[in-house]
Length: 211
Image (cartoon, rainbow, N blue to C red):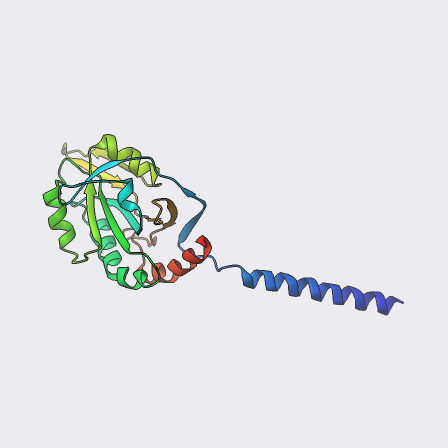
């Protein structure tokens, strides 16, 4: 009798363990450096100016995937490093998608970053998918906050202003909705910058979670 009960318990335990293992295997692996929103976030209407002096709005996000990053052209480290890495991995990331993949560099320093300045800056990275945009702070601040990023202006001892900004990269789907955020690699003594190898590893995992 005791042996029969023990055998039954072992059998049930093995069955439960097998079911749990099966269910775990069916779940997409979690990305290491990315946050996937449980529900896509809609954007409010916005009006920005691109590097060619053309107005861009929410409708310009439709029909494409977009990696969005905030910064400024006078940034000494995070911005050029991040844009170089994004420009480098864009072709590989684009192969994973059915729609085009664009990169938006959103300058949050409109006082110095004119469309001409932004155009010269983004052209340096030689990536046709990269578009630079900016606007007055009345448009920039709510838009940047809406996509889940931030920036702040502050003055230093010499009276010049500094720009603090997020180092994460946001992913928007072809419906113009925010769906994920890729976080920078944090290494002591180095600027927080996206790891391109980790981005390539996380990207298909993010797409799987979005299905």
